[in-house]
Length: 514
Image (cartoon, rainbow, N blue to C red; front, top):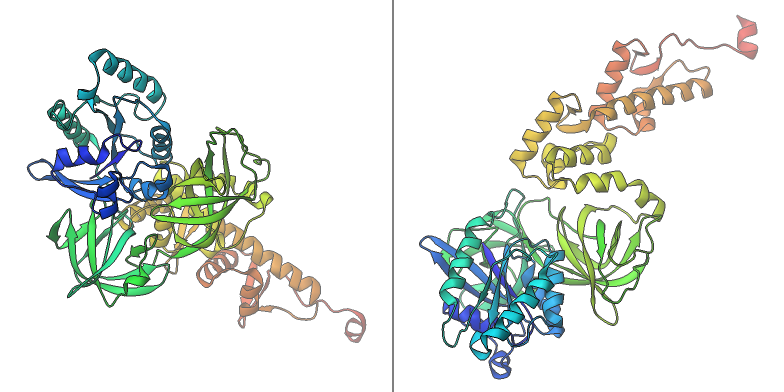
């Protein structure tokens, strides 16, 4: 599990992590000199015997929101820190909004510096913080007043955090391995080391991995998780991977380390956008924004579906995210949107589908059923939507599952349910929606009808030409043609197909000769 901090600058996040773990996360000289966090800090906490929790300490200054999101994207739960002296401040609220956009649902609230205020003031601040948290995912979270100087409240906070760890679900790792890179550096005698929080899957020693979007390959030479040597690294852990054959320049922050062939970089993604502008400005189609996704920041434009633009604050819309640089994303990935200039957080969104091309407003509106189905929590709904979208092209069960956000075993089980229910069919190693067979059959009949209308002398159409005209892949074409022949609608002779009962029509001089 990964526990992260969040909160306004100088509210005591780093000091609190040190008090809980004994580890200083302010590793940069400038951070220690200035007394503020600039970049991400990392520690681990032994919550109880056999239960080690990774801790990510994020900067609180508004100038380092990009670094904050890079750390928050891998969190399972949050330790939300508010100073008892000041209460909720601007970055407290912005961090809270970002955490919500990233899908965080669990946390504990720490009221720090309790030794610096009177009891009456502490009670007032606690009540005010509770009011500010109402309606957020932290409204029912435990609130504990602490002092790292005197130690007051630390034991109570540890207990609250332990309860949080116990009720937080383990990270789901069904998809192939993917780890956004937050640091990369070179160690003499070891080579290039990349660190991050794996979002999915598992990687082991000697596994081959790819660095995206650069496309370079490497081999895992050694692994550390939570500061100790390990044989594997998986989602829900902090990990450092030493990569043989890799150059540090191939894996800057914002890159991803992946295993398998499914993950691929792209620039066009269909998304669901939540607009939360604090200034009341509408989000219009074509708006230029900053996308904070995992550890990456990329400039993009948001194209909205017809009828959705503009989006008022508090509104939600489907659209297409058009990035200016490649990025690796998958179904369900959360991201944060910030305005291009001036830079403020204006919302976030969820990745739904990797697009092959740019989609206009009308086509995006037509894709709304797909988008809504992909937001479903039901795996069968998502897989059904994927099969409907790929149509007569079909897809392997593994690839269909990947697009639906399912691991290989779960995808196989869901696909079997669809096959048994007659909602899908499998031909040539590919799975299709049942409607694809009927659609292919209709396309074959239409192609033959058009052929007979134009070619009155020729008796039949070569099978290869018929397949080309129908646009159907081989397995589906063969199945549809066989069904039509068996049903008596089409006849096949000498490697040619014709509509049943159709004979060569003789017209003009040919008819007169007969």
